[in-house]
Image 1: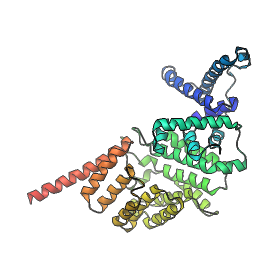
Image 2: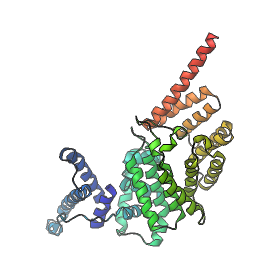
Image 3: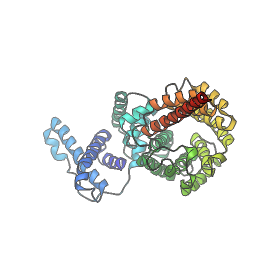
Image 4: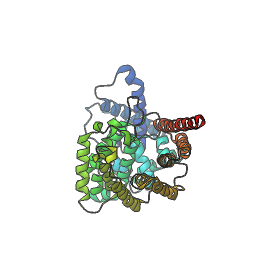
Amino acid sequence: MTPQVLGTLVRRHGDFDAAEDAVQEALLAAALHWPRDGVPQKPRGWLIQTAERRLIDQLRSEQSRRSRESLALLQEAPTQEVSDQDDTLIVLFMCCHPALTAASAIALTLRAVGGLTTAEIANAFLVDEATMAQRISRAKQRIKASGVPFRMPTREEQTARLRTVLHVLYLIFNEGYASSTGGELQRTELSDEAIRLTRMVQRMLPDDGEVAGLLALMLLIDARRPARTDPAGELIPLAEQDRTLWDRALITEGVALINRAIGNGAVGEYQLQAAIAAVHDRAPRADDTDWPQILALYGLLEQMTGNPVVTLNRAVAAAMAEGPSAGLALLDAVGERLAGHYRLDAVRAHLLEMAGDTKGALAHYRAAATRTTSLPEQRYLAAQAARLNLEATGDDASRLRR
């Protein structure tokens, strides 16, 4: 809802920076009033009108410093029925303007469209919060200075910005599916919004294979959501999930999308990721997973992207297909690039446990638990360490009795 409110204000007033500030104030007002007075019948309209009033107050304040006579030019907040027009897609493409670097465009869009906090975005980019706040502020100023009109970009402009747009949607979905910070494993409002926006992009560009690949990837992964946590909200790993809880309608739609996309032209990174997700989702049991096929797909994806996280996932696939020593060898090759990242420790712990190195696995589970900023993941990793410690203690006691 927030990006829709922002889009309406930017369309009406043309000032992205001031509009975002006004929307934030409206959200704060909602947090104060709605618990007491109840959620209004039309919450989006309430937010738009409240934000509009805040924005006009800002304009009045700025205008009065320049010329009190110009106050008469300002219009009061409209009281007419709020339009159902959804400007989110325009905001999305506007934030990915070529006047910005890719990193700045992604950061700004995660804030304006994804609704992530500055701290969450900073965590995704591995920088401190103050640095990210400056980056976002500079990006908003560049958008304002560029004078870019608030409209849907032309076909040529869409093509130029599409890669950044897809990357932003991918990051928003990931943050919703596996929140990087806080006490909840999932933020469904983010993953749902990412899917909604990707569907809009796919309707706009129905023949683009990577758009279809990204939508397929989101659907295939989101299908597992009902099985990812227990009743207490604790994480359940993929291998232990009850697959009868997976959303078969989403899986069917996702598989159909990726099958069509891969059959039409060059294959991109989102299509490869979706193909991997489809292999997982088609397996009725974890033991039925076609790990050699997944390993081959990760090999292609690694060649295409050079992303160390892809290598990390390839290491897991290698361990499942060829044994833990094969996976550990891949980890050694990427260790320096991911030094200090909790996922490297978590994967190494898992593979060491597969190899029978309980002591090494215990140490890396503990290290991973201290490094993650997600509380559900922290609890899961700590529980794995506690389990191994208990097993090791029991073995020691058994040897003493003998």
